[in-house]
Structures are given as C-alpha cells and as structure tokens.
Length: 110
Length: 110
Image (cartoon, rainbow over all chains, first blue to last red; front, top):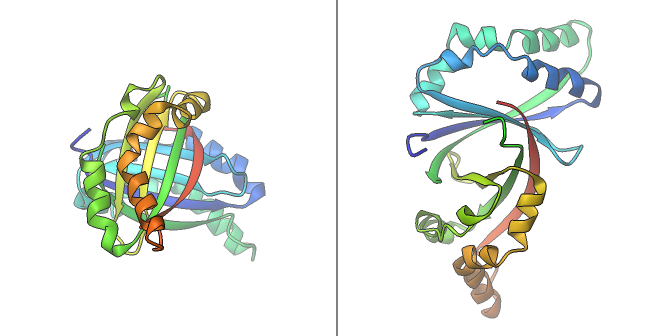
C-alpha cells in the first residue's frame, strides 16, 4: 500500500440517457492502462445519489508515471469508444453525453 | 479486488490554519476502523490544488458493514481528537476548523 503515492480522479457528470452505455464501457474496458509502468490499480465508483458524479480513480507510483499515461498511445486506445461517442454527439450538434472534471492527489495515509 | 463493493468518501474542506494538524491526525490515526468487520482499506488523499478538498475514502464489503462502523464505539474512538477540535472551536465561538460532505458509491469496475 505504501508505494501508492499519486492518485488521479476524473469526476464524470453523465447524461441520464448515457449512464447505461457509460457503465458498459467500463465493464468491458480495454485494460490498456493496466500495461503502463507505475500503474497500480483503478476503481470506477457509481454514486449512490442518482444525480451524483461517477468517479474514475487511478493509483500511480508517481505523477510522472501518470503523465506518461496521458501522453501514451495506450491512453488513446483505452478511451477510443468514449471519445467516439463524444465526437459523434458533437458532429450531430448535440450536447456531449458526459462532462468531466479532473483532479489529482497525493496519498498521505492509509 | 472484486469483493470491495462499497466506498464511502468524506470530502473535507480544511481551514488553512488547520491543515497541518489535520494531516498529523491521520498520520497518527487510531486505526480503530481497521478492526471493523467488512473493512478493507482506507486512503487519505491530499489535493494537488491547495484550495481543494481532502478525501477520506474507505472500502467496505457492503453498505451494512459501513453503517455498523458509523454506529460503533470504534467510530467515536477513531474520531476522538478531530471531534474534540471541532467542539473546542464551537465552545470558543469560532468557525469549525473543517467542514465535511459525505458521499457513498458502489464499485462497478476495477
């Protein structure tokens, strides 16, 4: 546990009509992130409050390992279907199916 | 991993002059929660953004196990110093040193 030093959380506000698809994307995720150096684990958290945000959390050895992921081909591979859904909505002049707010943290106790 | 089904997150907005004390409380925590049935692990996350919230996350086998903790003598024991700090501020007519917002989640993917 003590080596999990850096945490990235994506807070996702999902449109109601996209929730089922969103959950299915993670239930069948590409596991591209799992191959990255310095990656420990991830959790997808569904809010008990139906209006709440989903949380996508990933645990990393360091911020540098996390940044390497965001700049990697694996990042594109891992987000392919989600990015396609967003691009499709944009092409059709619709609102994006989800909005994300991104925050990072350091683990200071376990 | 697959048995970690329920997650509780306390989002803590800490006064600037309480941050050092807050971090020290968790660095020397009582580990009372660790004795609870159905408890897996906890993480204390410090925000990279200095105005951000701290996150206190705990992973549980089920919501029932988590609720048993919030109603246990161990809960009082584990929060003794923090609760005392809040009571002291109140007695002195000051603002509380921290404010918390509490949310729960289900793990839907790892």
